[in-house]
Every structure is written in C-alpha cells, then in structure tokens.
Image (cartoon, rainbow, N blue to C red):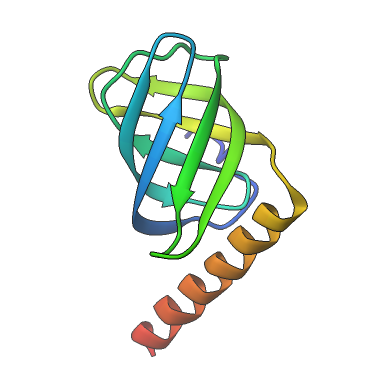
Length: 110
C-alpha cells in the first residue's frame, strides 16, 4: 500500500480559483484543500515540478494567493499543488478558513 504523503489534514471543498503557469492561465475549482496544498480541478497544461501561481476565493470577500509546485497531474482533469510561499496574512487566512471547515464537518458528524 502506498504511504500517505500528505502531512496536513485535508478538507473537501468547492472553491472558485484562478491559476497561472508557464503556458496556461485558467479558471478552476479547488476540490481538496489543506494548509500545505490542494487539488485544482481545471483544464490547461501543466507539468510536474512546474511552479504555478494560484488564487483561491475563500468567500465572496476574501481571496488568498499562493505560489506552489505541481506534484501530480491528471490530464484534462486537474493537478495537485504543494504550496511553496505566500504572505503570512494569506497563510493565516487559510488556516482560519480550514479550522472553520473542520469544525463544521465535525458538528455534522455529531
């Protein structure tokens, strides 16, 4: 069995996003999100190890921006990104958002 590579808990989400790579600039949907990375549901061409800029809309009033490295690519479906850098404010906003998602999911299970 393959070892789990993710080091942070993931949340299933449906967030509007935009990304830009070497040859593509696309709208997308983030469907899986953690403090360390995400899965981007999108067309467009990327290569593993490519550096991409990603803007994720957490709410109508709040977006966060990250630079990340493509770590896996599924042609015509999307790609997985490991976040490399962002502002401390965006990192804090993402952490707060994820905390609220995890709390909401836990209360639905209870």
